[in-house]
Image 1 (tube, one colour):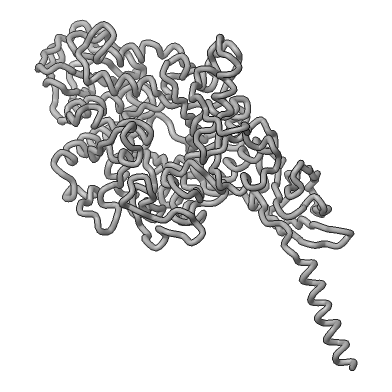
Image 2: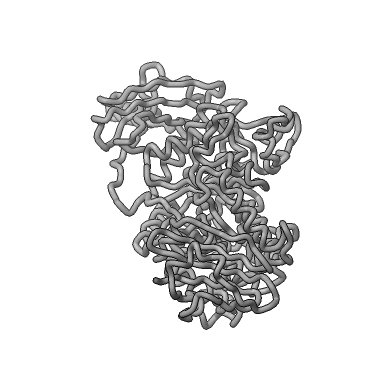
Length: 616
């Protein structure tokens, strides 16, 4: 009898222990943090069934905390103040009910990394290479599908997932060095657990998790480390404006105002100009800010302070965890602009050398300049974002080489864009691109004329700003945005084991592809040691007879660039350029390597560019 009673007590005791260790918290975000941050405050989101019924206790010297409840009882927000004296280690967060501890969360505070190669930032000496990971290279076919992910791989579907992954990127880091690239901008790698159109990565369903079809968090960190070892920087694509419809938030919102909600689906009008327009209606401004991008992308409300803090911390978490060098902010004007300014400020207070690039997709220069840090806006607004995308220049480039010169058209378009650089606080901190993942492939825009593409490349790599190359441009990929986004985001040939062509090697490229690859390579490798192009002043001359001449120069270095957009070979008399040429007697054309012994008269072939490094 005593034995049976003892067994009963043992089973009862095990049951009590089981109850006391019940996992009521399903999610803890951020999953961990660091000591020694400039900002000692940390907001931790806890999610589980009826967490509002539990008491919280953190018994750790140097940490003060308060609990914030919200209208949804399944969430608790812990606001911690971490004193500078707190050492790395585990803190215990106890959840109690009726004075009994039900669950203990062992929350780790890590030591901050002290690696000079981390958070380098990027600048005008760099060249950025943008690519979509799903379409670049499939290094591990075993992760093409995941049982927990809704969409499966289907390479026959231009809008489906094709299987590119982090391992594929790591396998080809040498390709970027061979081409002459210095910085990798990778479209979002975070989880997109949607039914379709997940390959682009912009419908995020977990802000703290790499999509398992790409790899995992550790693999992303390894990618950054390996890139750094090969002298490459990494820029992470971040999204503040929206998430995916299948994000776990959406099924159980912390607060009703966590996202912008309407009686029925309401799409953004995509008119960012309304936010600056002095005559804009409140209707237009609200629709731009609060409307959704698409039915599968709920619009986040960054005016919600808890969400704003969550998003700020998420970006800092990825910077510290992975050691990235920059962030490209998707759809900068669509998120609440005051919150974006606070987000950028918070990042730069933690990482002074870090670079933030904002996507400011506007058509006019004055509207674009508004979104750059320290631009003297009449309303006093500063985004705190130093680098912005130069869509006005992109629009000019895509037309300039297709047209005959007039007072405002043809190659004069480039001149007029640059002539308005006074609107920027720093026109050099603009991203200059020929194409990207949202617009027509430039080779298609130029009617597959390699001569036009070469002129555009020469201009892009020598004008002011930071150049960005879209993957496949160096392989003459084609595609129009209005026909199919999936088709203009084609797979990189050779990125899959059974591809018929391998464009990662010169043997696998066509003659035309090698011609453009080598053209890029020649200019890019020279550009790495061309300080006048990096930081020099730009002086240009009004285009004449379809010829545009400009100089990049410092006190000790000078480069002369000539673009001949006509169908005829021309001889350029250089006397008008003497304010810059008078100090120099000879030069070297870097594309061909030909020495120029007489600068008085320079011959240039039709539809071509010359980049001449000048010498005394």
